[in-house]
Amino acid sequence: MSPPFPFSAIVGQDELKDALLLAAVDPSLGGVLVFGDRGTGKSTAVRALAALLPDIRARKGCAFNCDPAQPAGICPVCTGVLPRAAGAKRPAIEKRRTPVVDLPLGATEDRVCGTLDLEKALTSGEKAFEPGLLARANRGFLYIDEVNLLEDHLVDLLLDVAASGTNVVEREGLSIRHPARFVLVGSGNPEEGELRPQLLDRFGLSLDVSAPRDIQQRVEVIRRREAYDRNPEAFVADWAARDAKITARIRKSAAKLAKMETPTSVFELAATLCLRLGVDGLRGELTLIRAARARAALSGKREPGTADVVAVAPMALRHRLRRDPLDEAGSAARVERAVDEVSFGVAGHA
Image (cartoon, rainbow, N blue to C red; front, side, top):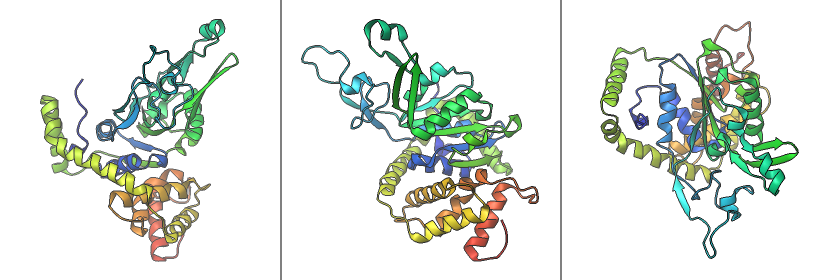
């Protein structure tokens, strides 16, 4: 298989790249939803992100990507339940790539959740469990292409897991649970159907992408893609240093974020903006503040400010607005208008 297209070589699509970097710095944002026409680089950008993510620590052979300090109770490798030769030590802790797992549209529930071997459980009393895609995605990213075409029973399943951070598999009175905390990334073509509101609300950030309108940008996209297709390894090597800088930036920003304080003015601005737009619940404020903090960390700031809130507001709030039949402006335009009114004190209605 060819290596993924370098993240730093992607031409344009700045909002898409910014959203993915924000999610990489702060996984608690809730994920990224990308809508756009075919051939606009949605999947390319998501797969390119995988090569940038800092490594995670896990025990060799662990199928759940457990944090060694907080292993899943069901994990035989991390809990020491797995049979070992006399005197043998538990598997060593290793570094592994942050998982980025694809969830196919036609996947069965067993493949997503994992399967429980009922025969072994009944005959030997052991809860033999074969982990699924959710276990593989733990502490990483779960990517769903054409997410708006996902079957309803899988949508319901993802809603439960995304809310709890735990995957529960129940069969014939037996119950297995394991951590499944991941950043959900979805992409799709809006012409092929809408996303269920319940799942839409679970995405922290949402954006629309389109092909570049500038001739020179389009030419550069084609030129780089041609170079990559001719010799993927050489092309990736040419951009490796720039990708490495982005990886270091993600790692440094995540460390900075853990120590960052948020001014009261930022909380007030986020709350005022959400009230002005009529956003339901408080998830809008939480996402807006977290995104502003992540942006501040990526910018090397000590704390988020008004500029950070303004910059991330469209992607954090556009998918949370109620439809207004009396307002023909798009959701992004409504958010930008509300930002102007709130930031500069101009009276009006979003």
